[in-house]
Length: 291
Ligand code: UTP
Image (cartoon, rainbow, N blue to C red; front, side):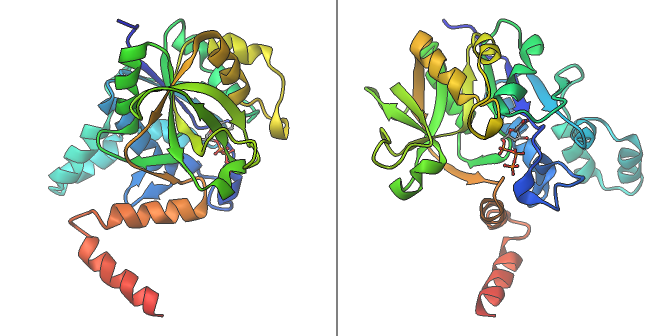
């Protein structure tokens, strides 16, 4: 049996420049889809997959993420006194158990690879899950749970992949597909932002990873990549050569909530599934479409 994946890392230190001015003083990861912040969806997904410890790599202006996972006594007291017990119960259900969260700081947004590296002391010598909270996945079971199932069979590094149109391929990290089913196939190569002619497939890396701790020393040895940032893909290419990767073409739908259209689409999809608001919201949508 491979070592159990107990820890998840959430890099939340980026500047969110695609969402300015909303993200000038507020973290992108706190943007709500209906009424839950993006970071809460990612933590829920990790909990469902059996994760026991949540490591957040934060930066300046990200203090509210820490507050979000803390108790808010005044609010709880007020809800209790006003008899809003359902809301109180919901708040308490989302609260991690004491000692289950850790926060570390990426002092400068030097790239995703660097943010992950900042978590090295907290992760130690264990495999860990990496979740980019601005990627939201609507799926049952959750994408990380689907990946952990593949990890338990192979014990390798795992990445979630999804199909895109070939015309869009050069915006993404792309994998080559070897033998095996959608639930767990061999990854033969990883290419960052290829032209459609050079792309080994139409399967892109989509924001969820299970990684072995050797990734940390690989990141520390690499220099800056595309855009002057320390990328994670360069280190993953080395990890692929050394240890191998399993790809999971997950069942479900993704929303890139780091982009405006992805974020707005997620709000529509999630709102239309909510019993308490869907009917009224659909009416509003139809009225807006006729304008
Ligand atoms: P993105 O590239 O989508 O986020 O990184 P960004 O840089 O904040 O956004 P834009 O492109 O400027 O709009 C994916 C995840 O990695 C984190 C981000 O917070 C986000 O959750 N990240 C990125 C870091 O923690 N540190 C970094 O240096 C870069």
